[in-house]
Length: 270
Ligand SMILES: NC(=O)C1=CN([C@@H]2O[C@H](COP(=O)(O)OP(=O)(O)OC[C@H]3O[C@@H](n4cnc5c(N)ncnc54)[C@H](OP(=O)(O)O)[C@@H]3O)[C@@H](O)[C@H]2O)C=CC1
Ligand SMILES: O=C(O)[C@@H]1CCC=N1
Image (tube, rainbow, N blue to C red; front, side, top):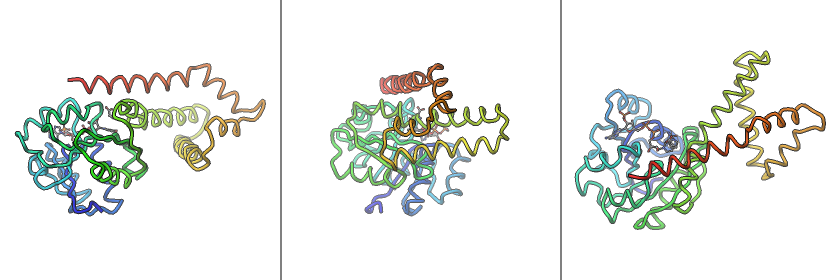
């Protein structure tokens, strides 16, 4: 499955866990995965939940792996790499999931000939419905890109984009689950406001989002056409949609993606 490569994660946080859980469910054996994580309780959690090798020392994980997933925060990554000592990452395929950090900055920090693939995944990888976009740095080759893509295809769907588009991907699908969770929460609250029990409202809200997304994906129809099919003349939906537009829903979504994209650009600066 990993074509003889072993995967090592530097940083065992939320996104690393989503990928680990997803690739295990996708058939990668736990013995092929190790993870470096500074907090002992978190290491124990990762070991007991997933059976992976969790270590305190980043260099232990790097030594045991041929493909290293950089899953620490962008703000700490230079310190993390420097802490491993010069040459520690030589010869490894480096797969960065860090928001904003350009491949060139990773090459500069890790060794100028480093083979770097950048990926922007999202947390639905946890349930094998992730959306990831990948691009490659100067020294990574087609095989490196295909290998990285095969990992993220195990946990959902992926596409390859030019690196200049990675900030926009981050603003849309990297951060996107948070917008959707907010929407689901708001739908559920609105149901409760209108008299529904909380459990019923939450279930209906989440299933409505799931169902609508599946309809877009499976019908191949434009969302505007699907919206028209819900919207009866003089009916309920047009009253709701008109209210959404009056309250700036579309503009609020665009502004959210703009803000997250701009923040990704900022995180990429030293
Ligand atoms: N969460 C998401 O939805 C997404 C996140 N990303 C990217 O993934 C990366 C991780 O994000 P996320 O998982 O949310 O963040 P987390 O804070 O959950 O994970 C980062 C992990 O790295 C650990 N860590 C800190 N310092 C070191 C160190 N020196 N050596 C090894 N590990 C260390 C942290 O430990 P401690 O808690 O003790 O600091 C933490 O467990 C980020 O770069 C982010 O941009 C990309 C796409 C989506
Ligand atoms: O909030 C963040 O910075 C990360 C990157 C994309 C999703 N979470």
